[in-house]
Length: 124
Image 1 (spheres, helix red, strand yellow):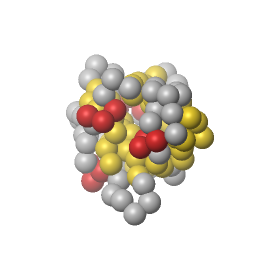
Image 2 (image 1 turned 90 degrees about the vertical axis):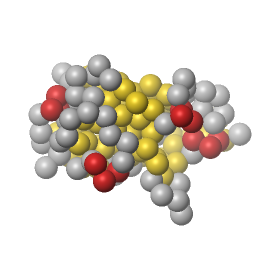
Image 3 (image 1 turned 135 degrees about the vertical axis):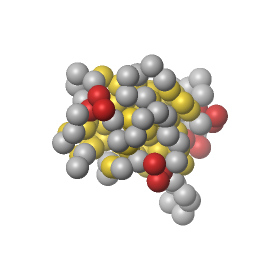
């Protein structure tokens, strides 16, 4: 079982930046495909970004392209989400997810383990 722990959320103003981190344990991190999702109360969880096992491929939802960057450090068993030029509509609980499968995945049912989430609030 993979354990995931997110950190780095908080309250910021529009235009600011945040970096989320997700530390993984319980499995060989370099064999996991990783992703970030977000959820607003009352709405379905939304895909944000994904990164392949070897870091050579990434994928983003259109609304964050050019502003968010997903990366991973396999030596530290950690995946990151650098969020720049934040907007109020980015406000959500952000979840880290891990998949035993190969390749980039943008559907939540394709992921096998989830973190507890970290709140990001962007004020206007």
